[in-house]
Amino acid sequence: MLTHVNKHGKPSMVDVSRKSISRRKAHARAVVLFPSGLITADNDGEVQSNKGPVFNTAIVAGVMAAKRTHELIPFCHPLGIEDCSVEITLDAGGNAVIDCRVTVEHKTGVEMEALTGATVAALTVYDMCKALSHDIRIGEVRLVSKKGGKSDFGRSDESSA
Image (cartoon, rainbow, N blue to C red; front, top):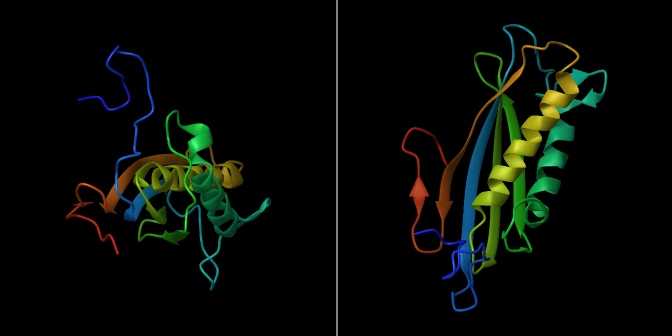
């Protein structure tokens, strides 16, 4: 059943007025794929480009995006996000792994906020590094886990801490 369509078949925001407030958490991940050996991090895990500190800038962009998801995605409810963290690490292949975790006490979940945060952080990494190579790609963006609401969800192939 499509939840964003009313009884007349028209687009509509989901009515959450009768739902209970509960603690909602979501964890999303995006990966930026770099050509082999292109990126190296300093001792603090930061990557520098001519535009500045790549990961620190992407972290700020991801949090800002998560907070503004309702302005970007039709019918997303505006939420007073209570916690949002973006972590970026380089994996063994030299790719940036971006994890965005969002928490709120509300009547609706924060999956879209976590996905938006991870995606915008990935776009920011791409933007800040694109002068280095045209072969940089944004890989899979996906929900890793969610807690709260009707049901919990977690991928067994990834850590959802």
